[in-house]
Length: 472
Ligand SMILES: *Cc1c(COP(=O)(O)O)cnc(C)c1O
Image (cartoon, rainbow, N blue to C red; front, side):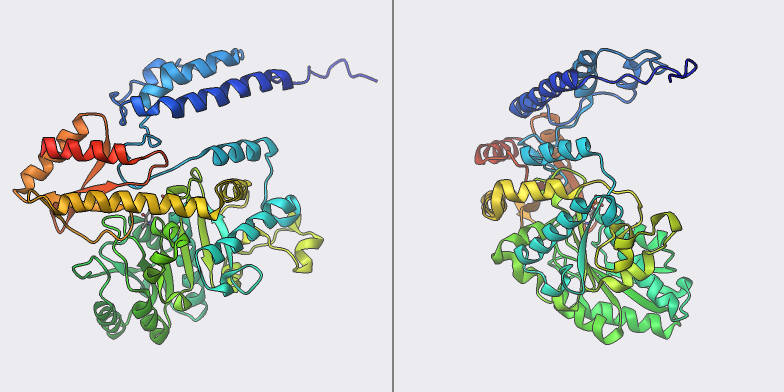
């Protein structure tokens, strides 16, 4: 019997229309990657220019899908800064890649919520398994695997991972009766802003930034002094972030020495390897992470340098019990036999959000498509290009390289004057052909050149060097 009062069912693009527009869109992306090199790297528009092209009100009637794709070119592209441009030397890379994009699409098509094992077992099991693979690939402690006492989980960003670690450490300390107001979190003066933000959100009363040496690495002696001073003042040292590959200069904090202090003083040790963690695929970089047996938690971003498009940040804990103890809350509608059996992982207990996408698919597909060896070759290629540029700078009396370059970032300034450095930053950016980042070190201007875009080749770095040579 049909109810005459029932409205019409909603209409959608038909499967055939979806197929047609989907194919067109894949063509569009492939063409974009083909031509991105010829576009100005940075968006050239003025504030408001994109909004001015949008109608004041949302459309009442649906529009033909071709028009939506057309507006990618006419409205969106002028407002895009091309992170996928081979002459992208700014910040750090934010790479995407064909297998990653295709996996992202498949994940969207499946549209699952993987908050519990039972809400899509494949999402959880593939995530756990691939993150266990990465424990071996990066030579991390075996105990960090989900098959052991630790475990990995994908988060949106390293900022989330660091914040989560801070929250777990605070929770443990609070159970001992320590007040958050008296808690202190430590990191070097070169730490990423996410550390300060995470500690503030997590309610730590104090954040102490510890001095670095001339190689931009945290000084363990200074950390020890800071901890002693804080204890003498009635405060409670709780948490240390050590960074492997700082954002400013890729400085590396000495994990082993810091770890020994954390062990003696009973502090939580978190490693922020957001960028440089990716390099640990290659054994020649692993001396930079010596001392991981002292570590409680670790984060790195495949969405920076491993060709998995944003968002994909890995968070490991050496022991998952404190994490789950802190974050697990069980309302009755989430109760189920699998969870109660204790035989499965429910990732909702491993981070702040409840709902979660099938992010592991793109990490899985990227690793399978390139192979570990393909990924290692990419890292080594970028590092070799960086050394080449650094040697050119070092062998030219107009420039000075201002920090070690253990990975694929080189920082330099003009010897002549700070004004010359600032002029060079602006002159190169004004060409529109490349993007790099002007920054500061010890209160003086410097230039960061990060070489890690997926499509960057020797000719792009040569072209950058020609610009530097010509405009300095
Ligand atoms: C990029 C970076 C971060 C922040 O990463 P998000 O994933 O964007 O939060 C944190 N720490 C370091 C050292 C970084 O380079």
